[in-house]
Image 1 (spheres, helix red, strand yellow):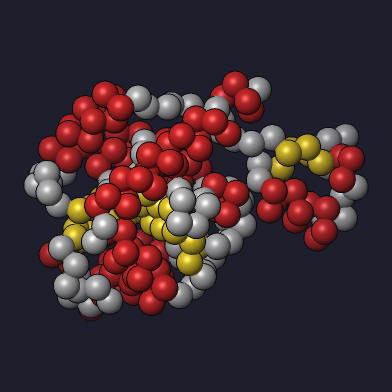
Image 2 (cartoon, rainbow, N blue to C red):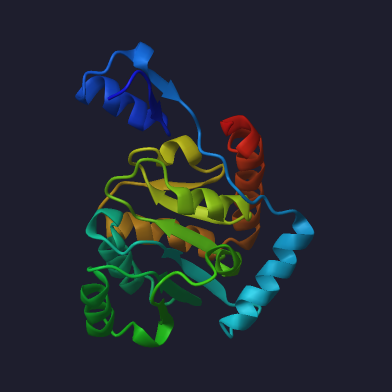
Length: 223
């Protein structure tokens, strides 16, 4: 294990000491530093470009996620949650690829969701496309920290995420986003619905999320 081990979240720190038996003196908590922090002007310009690239109407609420589509990330839970609020005026985005992608695509088709879901394989222009989201979802079943969540928060995006691993280190429920039980599509759908119907609350949480990242997760602090 070496002389010291870095933990990127308090949850990882507890995992190393409680489950792996490392002495606390050997574990150092070093929060991840976000590479790019965006000001208001850059965020607004980035949002306009990203939504134009996706051919989204300015008023469309885009909800979804971006990342490695593996089972541990819980994207199958998000797909089931998409089927619940059919009356919501939202578009969904599922961006990424992995072995799970084909199964997710089949389920999207079975649920009749394909016309409302943007499926983009791979992660093109990662930092740019995040600007397009109004609500970012992280339905993980396990998570060390959640780097895509950090990147979304740095752009002023409200997040709905599972209460697992390092995600509660990032999200104060009701302040910088919403936390829901893992593996629960009904609770996930309810969290999404709340933010989708409350533009003012969504903006307030997104702005609070960006301020939190600027305060706690800078490259300077990590170094």
